[in-house]
Length: 318
Image (tube, rainbow, N blue to C red; front, top):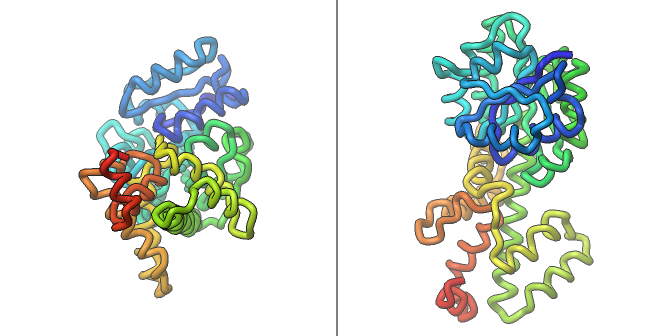
């Protein structure tokens, strides 16, 4: 066995790293989990959570890569990924022959291709593996991995064991890097569009005097029932938008998908309208919901409503 590296212990990475440890894939004396995060306290918290496990904290992404042959990475934005990968002590600086980088972030296709080319230029191998799922599924091992790139990495026994520990399904879209990202943007743009439509419907229901809980019950009994609606709906009515998937990240993915559709010559008007709702919510300095869950688009929709209910809701500080 050998050490496994993990770069990025954030909202998603924390749960994923915990799964590698709890499922016995990493964290033993023979196979330590080697970690680094821009906010070092997140690594300290992980180590404290598993005091009897072998978790090594490094001072840079470069040191993680130098210490391991297989390294997982998940960073929140294209800007964060570029900063971590390209820095003097970043991921690329540690890559050499035999190193395998598995990147699980949702980035632009061009970002993934650039990362693949840079890793391969130094003798390493690259697998894109963006994940479908949020904070809860990350902690419970219910993520879905959408992979493309190095087929040998994808089938590597350690990588397969890791993916199974962290997720409930994996899909391989071929050897060309970019197809995993395309799949992820299709999924996330649909999810964001569903959330925007759901928020509009709940806001309308409340604004015309309907009981929100009763409407959720009706939705849950029909053809449009959805696990996302069942999970998010009751929280939305209580204005609980604790972040599982931050709104600003959802908007980033939707914008990338809209751009992808334009480049492909595909009509994507419904999603483009939803993306604009997310943009408005993200930019609203009064609401300050960018770092809250993407369900908080509901608050922006309510704010724009001219109904007496919505006015009363705002006047009560809701």
